[in-house]
Every structure is written in C-alpha cells, then in structure tokens.
Amino acid sequence: MMETNRLGFSEWRENDLELALELWGDPLVSRLISANGRFSEQAIRERLQTEIHNNLKFQVQYWPVFELSSGSMIGCCGLRPYHNEARVFELGFHFKPEHWGKGYAHEAASAVLEHARSHLKAEFVVAGHHPDNMASAKLLSKLGFEYTHHEYYEATGLEHPTYQFKYELC
Image (cartoon, rainbow, N blue to C red; front, top):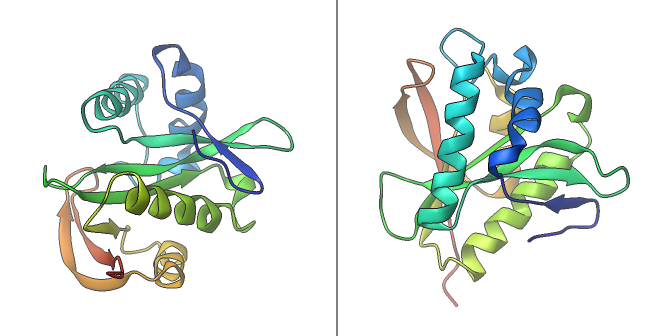
C-alpha cells in the first residue's frame, strides 16, 4: 500500500483481531484515547470493524504500520472521514510504547498526509489530541498543523485541541 524508508502500511482485515488486541489492548496506548483509559475486547472488535468499514466506504482507515526491518506491527496511522465531509479527513496515529521516540509517528504521518494530497485530493486534514498529550501536540506542530479550536471528543468525553493542515495550492 504505502511504504517509507523504515515503515510499511497494510490494511486491517477481519483476521487481524490479534493485532488489534495487541495494539488497542495495551493500556499505555489506550490511556489517552478512551474514556476510562482502556478498551474492552468488544470495543476493540468494534474498532476493527469501523476501520474495515471506513476502508470499504471511504478508502481510508488508521492503517496498520509495520517496521520493515523486523516485519513487526508497531502501531497504526491513517485517516478517517471528518464529519462526513467530502475530501476532508482526520489524521490519527497510535503506536506501541516501545516504538515511541523513534520518529516513526512523524514518518508515518508524513506519508499519510502525502497520500491524502496525491491520492485522495484532500482539501485539508484535521487532527486532535488528548489535552494531556503534549508529545502529539509537538508532533502536529512539526508536521505543519495549526491549532484552530477545541472540539468535543466522545471517546474520552473531553474537549481536545484540534488542528488543521492545509495543502498549498499549486
């Protein structure tokens, strides 16, 4: 699907429940993306189905990301439709803790932003983060996102800082 120097992207499939449980079942991954800091197995199953559905309907999902050197799944990064607007997407990424601080999120998100521009003809991309997640705030700024507003995020029940990435018109 997509590939960078160190990372390869795949698509979530029905038989990927074990990978989904490994990622979203990790309390360090889920602590800032769910209301109680954890996802039940049923919630992870539903999340997997949502990703598969988004891929079928919108050709986007938070794609599984694999480290090319080891072949191991290290997280996910991708897009979802933003308020059902055409050509406007929301960027998201979740990585396993042992892969934090290695530049993988930046590398993956950069590839996803390019994919949104070149293949999906995105008008713009939004992204948000948990108010306590300063690492994501720093990364979004480094990627070129600009803060626009706070937005209620149902999964956590909190107002999240929200940012926008606008593509340069050529």
